[in-house]
Image 1 (cartoon, rainbow, N blue to C red):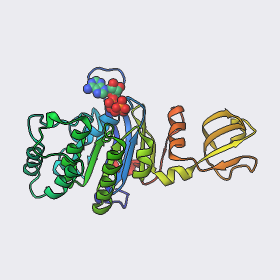
Image 2 (tube, rainbow, N blue to C red):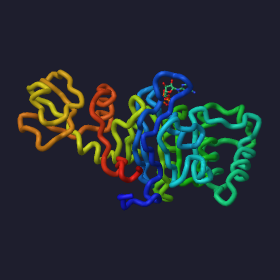
Image 3 (tube, rainbow, N blue to C red):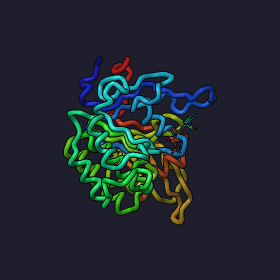
Image 4 (cartoon, rainbow, N blue to C red):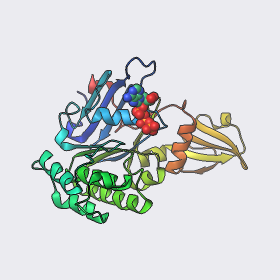
Amino acid sequence: MSSTRTTADVALEAYRLGKRYGRRPSAALDDCSFRLPAGRVSALVGPNGAGKSTLLALAAGLLRPTSGTLTVLGGAPGEARDRVAYLSQDKPLHPQLTIAETLRLGAELNPGRWDAAHAASLVEQGSLDPATKIRRLSGGQRTRVALALALGKRPDLMLLDEPMADLDPLARHEMMGTLMADAAERGTTVLMSSHIVAELTDACDHLLLLGDGRIRLGGGIDDLLTAHSLVTGRGTPADLAPHTVVESRASGRGLTALIRRDGPVDSGWEVQEPSLEELLLAHLRAPGAPALITPGTAVSVEVTA
Ligand SMILES: Nc1ncnc2c1ncn2[C@@H]1O[C@H](COP(=O)(O)OP(=O)(O)OP(=O)(O)O)[C@@H](O)[C@H]1O
């Protein structure tokens, strides 16, 4: 190993990870390599079918890779199950149990880790009666109970698959605040898929953008934003050489392009730092743009070979 990083610094490391479902011709994940440093709150973004749920289920140890490796908290996925909380999109809970019974089950399944007061307070914040059966809850109320189960476990790594999709805006804001406060206080690593960019902008400091089963953008959000510029001016994409033009469009003021800078930009162009939304939209509209994975998130061959 040539890296000075220890396994404790890295929550998740994928090396040439591949996952193919049955005999389907295209892989859900293909040659996917990245590293998620411990303590980061990372957004997992990508178009429908990009492989986000597949990656989260692999990390939770619920699926097995077809090729490559995935290391979770220094071991094989599933090995550190007691330190990992995974919330799938369908958030399975036992419909016949009450909320109180569900939380008791959480306590039994997580001996030594369970924070009953924390889980109960999350339920209380939603004005839910603990005696209510799960089957009588709305989708958003179930989400709250599922998040209480996940956070009550006091995990070191949270894998959340579109966790807030069915919460109302106020509940989403409040749950997100709780999640972020927990992560900040305890240094929890969070990997969270979402299509709601506003939700990610406030909460996340790290980004993994998946496309066609690979990482297209990976790194600290600030670093990724700094590496790009949104430029506007009278000119053509060819005039922007030597920069990499990720995406360009004709606009009222000539050409607007998102570029990855290679040196200073010619003074004829108006230059702005893109917002996270502008960065994501440009990459989603230009799936062929070259990938950028910043050093802390990239996996070098010597480290893993
Ligand atoms: N159980 C399965 N059997 C067969 N193919 C599957 C299965 N689950 C996912 N896939 C395929 O794998 C690919 C990746 O799916 P995945 O659900 O991981 O994407 P996603 O990024 O989470 O999508 P979305 O944003 O729509 O939730 C898709 O082409 C999907 O059709």
